[in-house]
Structures are given as structure tokens and as C-alpha cells.
Amino acid sequence: MEEKKFDVNSLIGFLLLGAIMVWYMYTNQPTPEELEKQRTEQIQDSIQSVQDQITQPSTKTVDSAITTVSPTDSVALSNAQSQLGAFAYSATLPSASANETVIENELLKIKVSNKGGQITDVELKEFKTNAQKPLHLVKDNNALFNINFATTDNRTLNTKDLFFEPTLSKNGENQVLSMKLKVSADQYLEYRYEIKPGDYMLDFAIKSQGMDRAINTTQPLQLNWDFKAYRQEKSIKTENMYGYFYYKADDDVSYLSFTDEDELKDVNWVAYKQHFFTSLLKTETPFSSANVSSTDLVKDEEKDTVFTKLFTLKAPLDMKNGELNYAMNWYYGPTDYKIFKKYKGTDIKDVADLGWGIFGWINRIIFIPVFTFLSTYMTNYGLIIILMTIIVRIIMSPVVYKSYLSSAKMKVLRPEMQAINERLKGKENAMKRQQETMALQRKAGVSPLAGCIPALIQMPVFFALFRFFPSEIGLRQKSFLWADDLSSYDMVAQLPFKIWFYGDHVSLFPILASIAIFFYMRMTQSQQMNMQQPTQEGMPDMSKMMKYMMYFSPLMMLFFFNNYASSLSLYYFVSNLLTIVIMLVIKNFIIDEDKIHAQIQENKAKPEKKKSKFKQRLDDAMKQAQVQQEQKKKNK
Image (cartoon, rainbow, N blue to C red; front, side):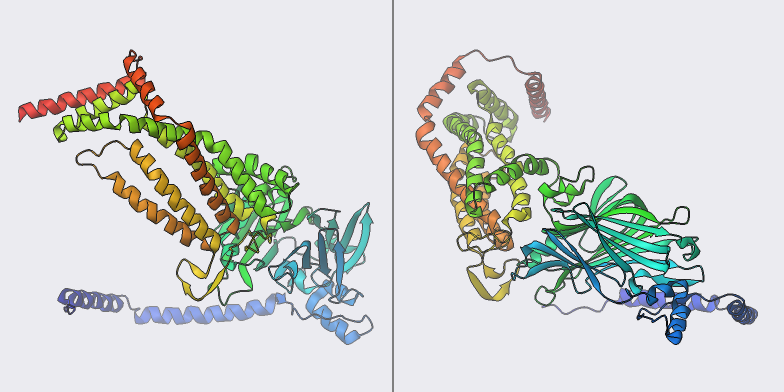
């Protein structure tokens, strides 16, 4: 090992920088006159500050520890009035306690606290946590909904610290809960919750009456919604990976990355997505602006096991004619495309991220309807995945046939192409060799691209299913064979240590999928070699690269899918297995190489068809390049 040499140039550079800094500080130090002027200005500022404190009333921030005040307790009432001003009235009402009111339907059980008038508990009745406990999206103060505002007597108050008066009523079959923060019998700020039967979406409204005399309307009211997402799933890594802050602003749906913040305009809704569950706030009157943020709380997967993300929203509320009037909606429920699309004109279906472009289209139009149809008749979701795989493979079998047919044709032509290579060796004949090869393929009715196109057609299906299976909530906590949850990894062995990128467990479905893809690639290697033209001088040997891929791809799948949804690994295992079977059937019972050879000879005997304009231009370009190459040889 070489010893580090002393860098003289670096030392000189540091000394020069130090000298420049000393010179700069010396030449820019204030003169005695400037120092005297600064002291005079500081004294004048101090005098002015004292005068301001004497002549102007102070802005008071209220202590959050506000308790119930008896109207007959003059001392407590006086203290409350000194803190709350006109809002001391709310502390004298019987509702001035941390009691909760329950509203519920078949799907949701929601508790709303008198203190703050906010939702303090949301239970999804049809779902359980990974530990098979009741699933709560909101519980134990993990969510905060608050409005910060200034009063006419220069106080700063927060609704989270004040007491609302509850009134529970009915609107047909709907339960309606009115929470009123009162400053008198007919002056109040109201939160209105309305829950409908069989619906995860609640109607929510923020209204005020006569509050222009209590709230300073010249200053904006600030709405805050903070939400710490509880871990609900088996794999905190996967749950965290699929958890995002979605929003619709400026008529465009987008999202924040794991730890990110942004300033938005014209916000219609924000959604806190936790892989399989979403908490969403929508407003009919868009927020004119908003500050949003997403913070990843999982720094160490072994220690940070309670929460996954912290989501925050800060948005001003505009008062019109001195009053608030916002019609909103809360959604607490599953991240399910089938449910989201029922809410027309909202675009919240984009929260169920099924992939962009053609991948999302394939999932929405094909795989979700097929999965939904099968799940109405079958309860074993592992068999549903296998049946879906069979359907996909049967639909794609013509593509596999086309690929194999092209491979067989190229295999028949391969001796003639090798003869051309032998006859036209050398770089100087590269152009002519390419021309004759293309002419032979064209005359025989063979296209080397015919084998690539089927593979390209299958790629969108591959990526669409890559997004579908990990996001389909119907697979959550559904078991199959040794996998206890098809939406998470299957585990057959727990490792006493953790392997980087692999994890601390062994999943069997990825192993089976890797073995299947290895034999599939080994089987198709000869097919790909048939499709490949003979190696030309100066070109890389593709056969070696294919051999490397045959070992590298299964290894990557083994590591990459060990922590992914077992349903995805099950699909790839069955898919590759079926593809191998289909290829064997095509090779041994459908394709006849003797007939293909006879057909190619027949095509070669026919007069050559008129070339397309593209092929004609390509041939002309190659001929021109060949002429230029021969001219260069002569000049040499």
C-alpha cells in the first residue's frame, strides 16, 4: 500500500485563502464613527419597542389545558374569559368535556370528540390488522384536525383546544352529527358530519354564524390536518413503499415522494395513502393555496414499527361576507379502484395506482374485471391467480406461436446465411454481406423482427400485472398453500441474520419462479440463437450475453421478489411453467420444419414482390454506402 504524499500545493492554497479572509475582515471592519452610529440606532429601537408595548394591546396565545368552567364559579369564569374572551362561553356549557359521540354504518365506526370537534377514532369494521386486531386508521391522537384563527380582541385560538357542543340527529337513513363551537346561543362555528349507509365517504361541512363579531376576518384562518399513518400490514417495507401523499391541484392529480413538501394552488382534495387504505379530504370550494408535506418515519425497519409516514396539510380558509361556508367530504376506507370509481368527477380513482399509460389501461379494462368476475364465483384466491394466469397464457399463445415460427424459419435459413458470411469475409465486405443477407430473408419471406415483436407485445402485460397484484386489496390476508397473505411475502424459513437486498427470511414462491424462468430461458436460448444472425466480424458475440442472462435473470428475480407480494411470484411461476408447456406443444406437435423448409423454397422461387418505399430507400442507402466504401478503397 502506497503512503500518502504530502500535497504542498494544497497547503499553499489553504494559506492563500486564509490570508485573503484576514485581509477581507480587516478592510471591512467598521470605523469608530460607524460603531457609534450602530449603538445610537440600537438605543432608539429599544425605546420604540417599549413605547409600542405600552400603546398597543398584546396578542395572547391561549393555554391548551382548558377545563370545564361552571357558570357559578366566578373565579374560574374570570380566568376563562381572560384566556378565551368571547369563546369562554363554550367552556361553560355541559359539553365542555372530552366526551365522544359515535356515528357509524355497516362499514365504519367513527368517534368525534367534543374537544376540538374532530374525529378521534376511525375503525374499519370489515378489516383487521396483520395481528388480526380491529383496524383503526385514526386512534390515540395520531390525527389532528385544527383551525387556527385570530379573534377580534387580538387572541390566537385553536379549535383543537376548544369545546364543541354535539347534536346527533337523522336525515332519512343518514346519521348527522352537528358540532358547534359557541360564543353565544346563536353565534357559533359548526362542523357537520353526515354518514350514509354502506358508504366510506362522509359529508362534512365547516360553517359559521355570526362569527364576524368574534373572529378577526382581516386575518386568514389556517386549517391544519396532520396524520401519522399506523402500520397495518405484514411487511412494513412494502407498506411504506406503496404509501404516498396524493393530491389534486390545478386540475392535475400528482403525489409527493417519500419525504417531500410542496406549495400548491387550487387544491380540490388530498389523500393520505397507506398501501391498502386511504384517508382523504375533499372540498367543493378548492383551497386557494396549500402547504403539503410527506415524511418517511421508517428509518430502521426493526425499531420504527408503529408508524410509516407523517402527512401534513396547511391551507387557508377564506371567509365570505364575514362567514365560513365550506362543503367537504371525508373518505376513510380501502384503496380500491372499484370503490373509488363510484365517486364520479373526483379523479380519486387515481389514488389506486395501477400504473401509468397502457399499463394502467390494461389493469382497468382487463385484469380488474377478470379478477372481480372470478372472485364472485371462487373463494380460493390462489386458484383465482392460477386461473387468471392460464387465461393470459392462452390469450398470448398465438404470440408464442408466431415467435417460434419465426425461429424455425430462421433456423432453416441459417446455413445459407452462414455461407454468405463465409463468402464475404472481412470488414470491407460488411455492407455487401448485409445486403445479401437481407435480400435472402426478404425473398424467403422471413423477417428477423418477427421474433422480437411478440416479446414486445408481452411486455405491457408483464408490467401491468407487476402493478396489479401488489395493489389488489382483494388479495389482502388471503392464504394459499404455505402463503398466509397473498398480498405480502410468503415465508418458509426465518434467517438468523439479514442479507442485503434479500431480507431475513426465505420465500418459496420466488425460488419456484426463479427455477421456472431458468428452464424457460434455457429452452428459449436455442430459439434465440436461431433468430440471431451469424456473428459478423467486429460485432459482439450475442450467444455469450444470452448465456449470462440465463443465469443472471433468475438470480435477480430470486432476490428482488423475496420481499414482494407472493401473488406476484405465484403468477410468474405458473406463467413460466405454462409457457414451457405451450412451447413444447408448439415445437413437437404444431411446427413441422420440413414443411417450413419447403415453403421457404417455394417463396424463393416466386418473383420478388415490389418493395415498399421504406425498403427501397433502405436498399438505396446501403448501395450508396457500398459505392462510397469501394471508392475509398480505390483512392487508397
